[in-house]
Image (cartoon, rainbow, N blue to C red; front, top):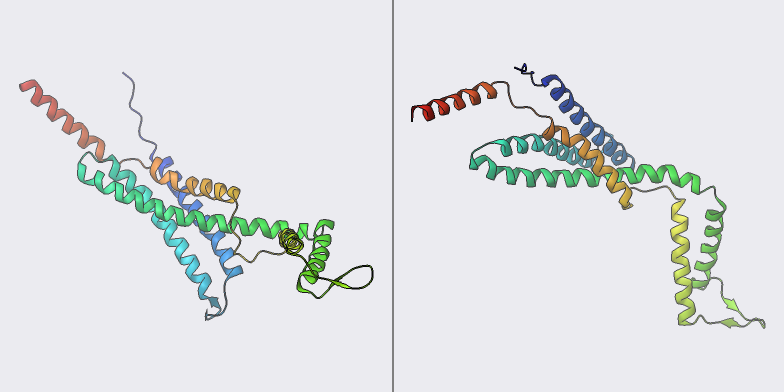
Length: 235
């Protein structure tokens, strides 16, 4: 008869702690970006209220998501209908908290990425030419640099020509923005969203996947099974 092995409770605890640490690191990343891009109009001492609220929202969302995953997995494991009905509500709350945490992290990852990319792009010839061309195009659109013919007469921009110049200015502005440092209001890319989602799931999954039942649950279950078996024999 094979010897029954004990549940790996030490590993379960270590993995739960590792998941919680991932959530903490996630919120540190969000906090650094929040304090660098915060509106400093309203201050609490030396702390911007805007950054403080952003960090608090992130910490609470992370705590609700991680703790919610633990409680939700336990509710789904219960045999009775009451906890299982409650599990659906707990899952919805956990997903809402996770969505907020993922958005905050993806925005932070976008800011870190742009902080690294912008200085490098600002040194390129493409960036310098775009800035010069944008200034010239905007001067023509505003009338500061009127267009003239060969005889020196001022030419009026036609509707199509103005539309073409506006499109050119929009394109050049997008190129120039690649070399400008981010303000924190830039929307994250799909890649930023995917990376944030994977990082958040890496912290959240241990809360549900690696939590083991209490050691007292097995003897109770065995005793209950034994009583049922005896009753069946008597019948």
